[in-house]
Structure formats: C-alpha cells, structure tokens
Length: 283
Image (cartoon, rainbow, N blue to C red; front, side, top):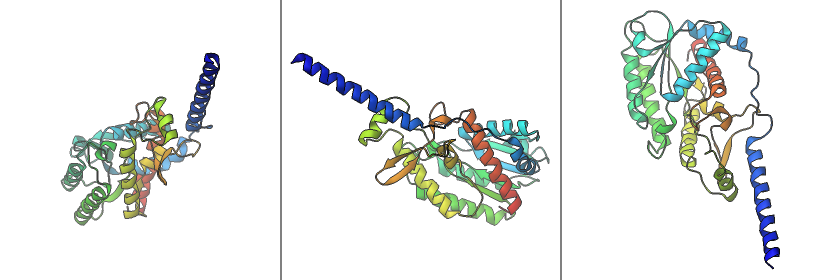
C-alpha cells in the first residue's frame, strides 16, 4: 500500500515538473535571439535629430534610452550632442538636452515641470520635445487613474502648443514591468492567479491605449510596444479575463523594469525614428 502511494506521488511530482517545464518553455519561446541591426538604416534619422534642439523629460528608463542612443550614434558615425538640461541655455548649438523631470509616482508634477521648462527655454527655443512618464507613475504607489492622467497630459500639451505653436511635440507611452522571475509566476499563470506586477501593468496598458487614441496620427515614441514585442515578433502578455495585457519581455531587462543592452538598442531605434519623423513632418 505504502509503495503504491509512493509511486502515485512520484508520478504526480514528475507530472508537475513536466508541466512547469512546458510552461517555462512556452514563456521563453523559440527564436528569441537578437536580430542583427543595420545601423546605417538609422543614419538619416540621426542626421535629422543631430541638427535640432530637443528637450527630453524622463527618469531612469529614459537614461537607458539615452545610453542606447549614444551607442547607436557612435556605431552609425553620426555625432550627436547629448547633454543635461542645464547646458541648453548656455549654447546655441543643437543637441538632445535631457532632464530627470519631477518625482516618480507624482506624474502631475512632471507635466507642470515639463510645461514650465519649455516655456522658459531662453533665447534659443527647442525644435522638439518629449515627456516620458515612469512605470512607477501608474502603480499602487503612484497614480491609479490612467484616463485622468491622459486628460491632464492632454491639457498640458494644449497649453504648450498655444504658447509654442512651432514646437514639434512627440508623445510617449508608459514603459512596462516584466513578469516576476522565478518558478511561482508560471504556476500563477497556470491557475489564473495574479502576480504582484499585474495591476500596475493593467493601469499602464489602459493609459497607453487611451494615449494612442487621443493622439492618433501624431508622433509617438511607443516604448511599451517595443518592450512587449519579442525579437521573434511574438508579444509578451498575460490574460486578464478576456483582455490581453502587455508586459516588458524578460529578454530586454535584467531587473524587471530597466532595459539591458538589447532593450536599450531597440528603444533607441524607436526613439530616433519618432523624433526624426516629427521634425520632418511638423510634429
């Protein structure tokens, strides 16, 4: 009897291990190796933004994007000045001037500071500007109403455009968080339980959907789409009821939120394309 029970337990254990292995393999998926990039394809876009004055308001993921941008610029052989905001009012030269804007988890303050910085830009105005919120801005510890944040952002954009009608504005989706690493996440997905990142990513997804609708046809740095699209073009998502919610693909991060070298490269390429498109089209 005891032997029979032991054999049953052993089969159950092996079955569970096999199931977990299958879930893990499905999450990783085949063909997720980085796709070679021809940096020459971005030379024209880099030339365009290298001739402009640009303000980029961001926080830590923004620094990841800038690191990827500096590497892309170097590999393409296109000199691009990337400098802190304090440099902007000391030079007439073009450049991408960036600032750690506001405080994370306080997105309304970021909108106000972004507007203030643009409208007090000194003797040489900016040609383009972009504000990127942080994933912490929409979270349990930050703001929890995605549509209200889009409303506030849209009002800020309207004020800026009224005072700076020639400014090319680029919008940005909110970056995502990845599924928690470890063996618990596949089990939770299997039995339909949420992870600690799901609520935040749901809020970010709602914001991004509303932002895309509100500013449809306008220049957009869609970092959330980049983060959730694997090299194989599969999407990194989880299901919440009948809704598919995107997540930061694990292949692009080492800590669940910030971008590794591959993520930096992909984000930088999208960043360059969005800015160049805005500068050429009128933004």
